[in-house]
Length: 216
Ligand SMILES: [Zn+2]
Image (cartoon, protein in one colour):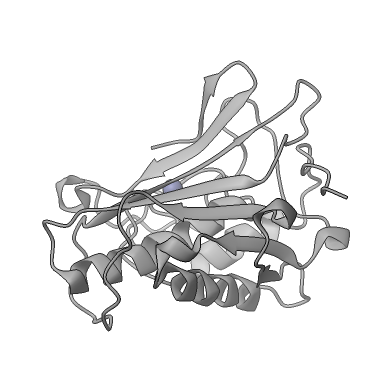
């Protein structure tokens, strides 16, 4: 699903996940994909003076903290010159990104290379002011489906956590290729060459959407 405005002043970055197998889109290679907020053309990325970006993960999210840590490292590794770095923090009031899980703590089991199934979903949202400043931290909410195996849930949450982090670093649209982490229903857990190329262009494009001021 594309980034779209929810209501006046509210931007819902994306809804992703459930029923990955029902998506008919096949692989379609492209060199890059759009990253602006589609409805407005606004561009967001973190300015260097806000690095490292502070990410808080609800302790009730259990293993998701480790998935988010992996995702932050994966995204940071994409950049040649340290354009993005993230760090986990313990105080949500000081965070730029808040990550929570709907419902019970997900099972903490080893991940596998099993084929992706739609055992979870994620949404990343934020609000903006009329003069195009975010009003607070990005909020990432992950939802998992207990009808799937614990392994499928772990595999899915690991992929979707990395995908949602992609939205929080400024990739506000989805790729149409299943090979990319920013495909709406991610099948891979790491940024692809196309994700890398896209985020590289993003971080060399002037931002028109500013982050929220940090709490003092
Ligand atoms: Zn998404």
